[in-house]
Image 1 (cartoon, rainbow, N blue to C red):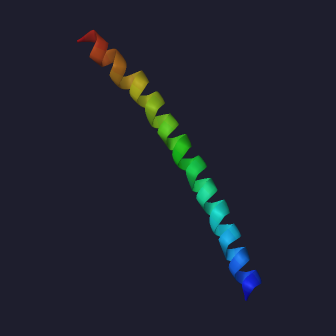
Image 2 (cartoon, one colour; image 1 turned 90 degrees about the horizontal axis):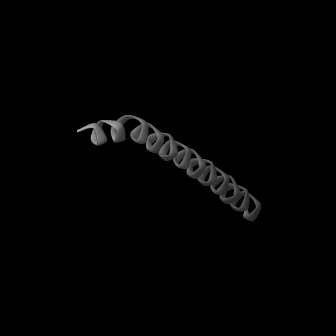
Amino acid sequence: MNGLVGLFIEVLHQKMYQMKLFTNHINFKICLLLSDDVLPRVTKK
């Protein structure tokens, strides 16, 4: 039983880590898109 819980927690940690990497990646992409798209328009006005 303990082994199962340990395994579950380990998998959960890995998933959380992957999600963190994924959200960081998405945030980075959004920042790039915003800086490419919005900033030029704002500076033109």
